[in-house]
Structures are given as C-alpha cells and as structure tokens.
Image 1: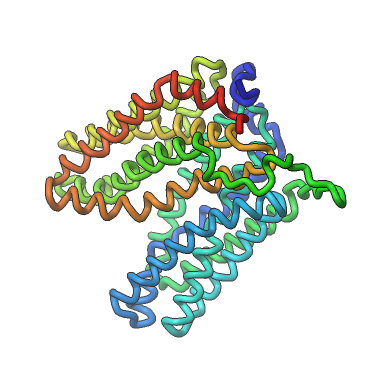
Image 2: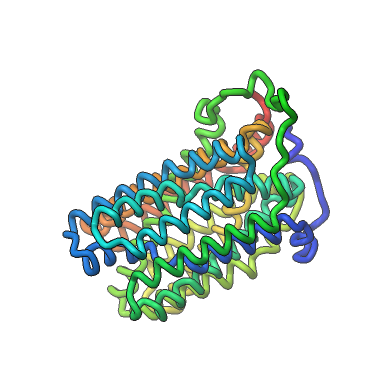
Length: 406
C-alpha cells in the first residue's frame, strides 16, 4: 500500500496544522485572491449594460471564458510540474490581474471579449500549483486536514466577497473588475515575497523516472475512476447552486434566506474541520463514503424542506459532507500521482469541476422544467447515494493499495 495512505499520525490540532509556513502563506494568498473574486458573475452585465452587447454575444463570451478556464487548469498542472508551484502561482495570479484590468478598462465588446478569454486562460492556473504545494508541505496523514482547511477558508472568503459585491455593485461593474484585479496583484505579490522559491533540478539531471517522463495522467485507470466519481459529485453540487435559489423562491423563503444559508455553510465548514484531523486507515477508507452519504441526505432535505429551518438543517448536513470530500478526494488524487506528475494529476482531477460547471446548469434547468424541484433534488440525492455505495471502504482501499503502481 502507498505510504501516503498508510502512515498513521497523531490527531492534528489547529495550531499544529498551521505550523508550516508554506501552508499559512498559501492560505493567505488564496483568501486575499478570493476576497476580490466577486466580479465574474457581473461579466454578462458589463458586456450588455455597459458595452451594449446583445444577450447572445454576451452568452458566447461567457461560454468562451468557461472553455478557457477548463484549459487553464491543465496549463497550470503542466507549469507546476515544470516551473514549480510558486512560479506558477505568481504567474497565474499576475495574468488574472492583467486580464481584470483589461475588463475594467475595455471600451469595446471585442476588447472585453479578448480580456475575458485571457482571464479564462489564467483563471485556474494557480489551482493545481496550490494543491501541489500543499502536498509537498504537509505530511501524508495531514493532507486531508490541510485541503479541508483551505476549502473552509475559501468558503468564508467567498461569503465576504459576496458582501463586498453587494456594497460595491451600485458604484458600477468596472470598479468590481478593477478591485478584483487589485486583489490578484496583491496575492501575487505576497506569494512572490513569502513562498519558498522553487527548487530547480541540477543541470542535466531529470528527477523523473523513464517510466514517468511524458506519461499522461489520463492513461491512469485509477485517476479516470476518481475523475468520473468527482464529475458526478460536482454536477450534483453545482446543480444545487442553480436549483436552490429557485426552490427558496418557490417556497417563500426569498433571497435573504439564500444569503443566510451561505453563511451557515461557511460556519459549518469551519466547525467541522476536526473531522479531517482524525487519522487511521479505517477512517481514511470510510470518509469518502460518509461524505457522499451526507451530501445525499442533505440535498434530499432540500427537496422536502418547507421553511427556512428545514433548509438550514439540510445545508449544514451538506456542508459536513463537502468538508469530508474536499479533504479526502484531493488527497486520493495526489496519492495516485508519481512524484514528478503531481501537478498534472491534480489538474486532470480538477477538470471534473469545469466539465460539471457546463453540465450542471443544463441538467438542472431540464430537470426543473420537466419534473419540478423534487425531480432535481431526488436526482442529485440519488447520484450521491450511488457514489456513497461505490466508494465503500473496499473501493477506497483498492485505490490506496494501487497508488504508486503503473
């Protein structure tokens, strides 16, 4: 069995978890960047209301951004393996800042479209590099906790970003993109100044083995299985983002209730962090199945909730499940990768979220149209329930035992 999944370590407390300087700095970098990431939902508004584009044109530009963002993650994975995590993070954030300035200052539809595509190509470049850096900074038994802590911090920062957007939106969408660019630039500066420089291989020395050099992550059957599972999960979760506001409106809860649910989700994500600090092979094998089961119960609860209290309980259950999955699925993906392909493996695994972002709105709106809210929530719950069964401890053990095999 791969050492990354068999090392038994003592439970990790909060201070010990943040004892690694690389982890602390990276979380600060990502939080600063996330605090300004409130402008993207306003891209269509910038194109239509400010620059006079048609709805069709705006839709095409947003779709082009989405396609470019999928490619950006693969680009980031390759750069992380060749240039190193810090260089890739700084490069990606700096490119986002430049593209954000282009959107803030664009005076024509075509310039805005070009800036949007550039932003898409840079949008996820730093993600695989961030994950690869955490893999290198944390010992194997602590990786689920580190990944979970990053996800929780991003959730809280996202909530604060939404509040900032609500305050700044009346001043004009250009200011939103300008401030987004500013936070990207500040985050890039922090990363450049405080992250440990990447170690370069000695001249003429290639640390990769002949078997690993040039190998594509997509040829790994185990990664394809993990990718497929995460694609189903991501589609269910993102479909709920589309359907939840509709369901709340239909049942008289309103938009304020949606904001309160986001706050509950962020709070629960922080409170549930000790679940990721537990160690032991039994817990590692059970955690994915438990996470999928909790998400299934929670989204089923969305379908049956009649008032805010029911939605709040369902939201808390989903948040606990997502905490478990955010830490352990990424850890499994990293455990499958040869040392010199970690960035590319994590990038390939993460592409499932980009694909789900395309599939989920189409699927969610179709289910809503033909079967109502109940059909959408039941489909999402069924998908997660199937994943819970598929990721029973035996499956997790098989993935762990084969990690590191060709």
